Length: 183
Image (cartoon, rainbow, N blue to C red; front, side):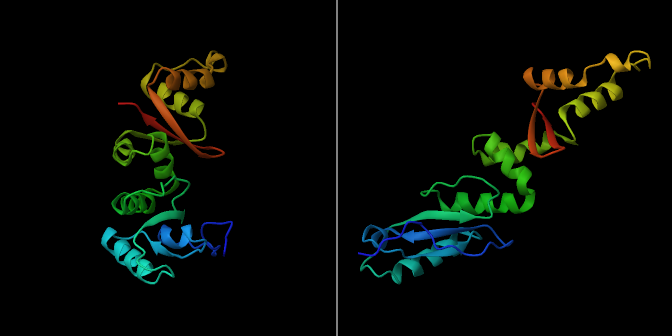
């Protein structure tokens, strides 16, 4: 019996379209690894590739499949049973919005609709939430006298904005904090 410790063969990373590795479950259950890497383009194209992969299976009458691996989705989680409509829509979103889109997708519990809608409330990118609090205070509030500026705790103000539910953040790296209004 042939066995494999990994669900998909290791392939070099590529900076192209997000893709999925779809495996034949008949072969997998028979102790063989048979599947194909498929670009997440259009659901009909993915289905076409899956049918061709199943037809070439070493197991007769193979008809069941599962997503065993994926790449290019910027850290988003994909279920092995996800619909190809969902996978392709997410791939489009990730190609358009990159890591920030992936961060929003995770923030909203893998809801693509909510992640898309959040961009309408994007307040901008800042080095920190404190920088955001300082900017909006200076833009909207009264001028702070020079003698008092050193007493303002911008970090606490930023934290309070988030704790109060006024904003939420997606942090993509050091000094890369995206702030979104909760509206």
